[in-house]
Length: 247
Image 1: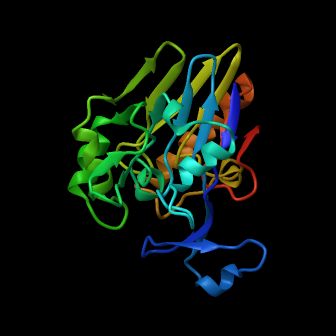
Image 2 (image 1 turned 90 degrees about the vertical axis):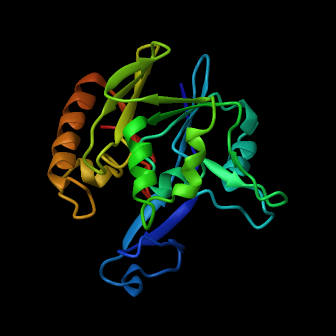
């Protein structure tokens, strides 16, 4: 399997939940305030024998030419965005789900960013996002998921096409889920915001911004132990230095 990080860049975020671009070569984190966190925004493309799989969809920003940043990253890697066959959503916070859909600049109509793909979304997470429109969730961006036939709602534990496995975790938000992609003896683990950075895997860290920080910490320890034993490759959505690694 091939892993392609699709970085949208580094950002700081504080209690306002606004993502402010951060230039690692010149910006000073201390100048952003004591409560600011430095994070990468980094969806992943996984190329398997049968699929082009997108893991989460970033902020949904456009580049200077007006092209969706996520589309441009795919094109730069020689991938037609219309070839994406599956979009797996860990959760629907705006930094992970901003690229689920976009507003057509000419008609104002909201469209799915990957109309040829099948989207996999936790059914309770979508309902929660729509009921909690605000700082973390933007209902306008994800409401379209209720209206399209190419969306499959999942919950609990299960498998997709026999080789993609999903697990409900909660923790970071009430209805968060993670994915394991297994093929040819290889396992790729995507923990979303339950396992967002390499540094968090190495410490017993309880984050105040998590819905249930203690559960997140316990899940990280559990996944770390299992991943070490089974040789997983971990993907880190918010790590500014290490997009993926074996532990």
